[in-house]
Each structure stands twice: as C-alpha cells, then as structure tokens.
Image 1 (spheres, one colour):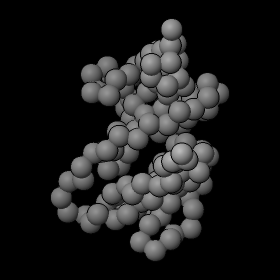
Image 2: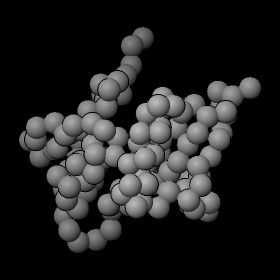
Image 3: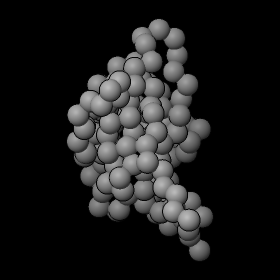
Image 4: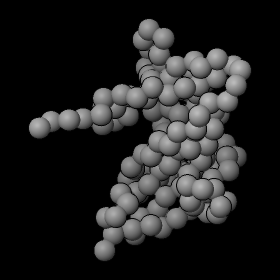
Amino acid sequence: MTIELNHTIVSAHDKKASAQFLADILGLEVSPEFGPFIPVQIPNGVTLDYADAGTSGPITSQHYAFLVSEEEFDEIFGRIEAAGLTYWADPFHRRAMEINTNDGGRGAYFEDPNGHNLEILTRPYGSGS
C-alpha cells in the first residue's frame, strides 16, 4: 500500500503574507498561486496550500510539525530569533524562549501570523532510546 500526504489547506487572514512567512522561516519558496490557493512545497513533496479565510473572526489554530536536520534546525532557529518571534519548548507554550531536547534531538514551537502552532524538530517523537 502506498499512501502519502499530498497537501493540506491552511486557513489564513492573508494567504499571500502567511505563505511568505512560512517560506521565509523555513528557507523555502512560495509556489505560484493555484486557483484560490498559494502553496508552499515542503522538500518531501507535501504542499501547504494557503487559502483566505476572510479578515473577520478567529482562525482555528492548527499544528504543523517539520522534521529537519540539525543543520536546518540551526538555520531556521536563527531566522526565528532574527525575526524576534517568541518560541517555546512545548506545545502548550509554557516554557517560553526555550528549546526542547526530546528523544535526543532539538525542538521548538512558534506561531505564524494566524496563530497556527508551528514546530521544528530534529528527531521524531518516540525515536529516542
């Protein structure tokens, strides 16, 4: 059986700005607009397709985790710090301005402009000994 996640739709107040935020932080490119979506393709082929949800009312926060190499973590984390973003070591945002070392790797959580909870991690959870 071959099942792969191909894409997911990400609600945004401003799809263009939100897609650019993610691309800039992760060091990726924004793809050309496709219908009502602005995609950001992750190197494993999955796209996050940003769609406008309108400017009124809250957007339900979603969680998007990105497994990265140690070198990529350093680069991305440097961009998070350079942007002055608050980051946390935990998904509940209790340990501000800390990174975690779960499973022998490193991880950090931060929010996008819509309140989505983004995560970078260097080891999948449960992979440590």
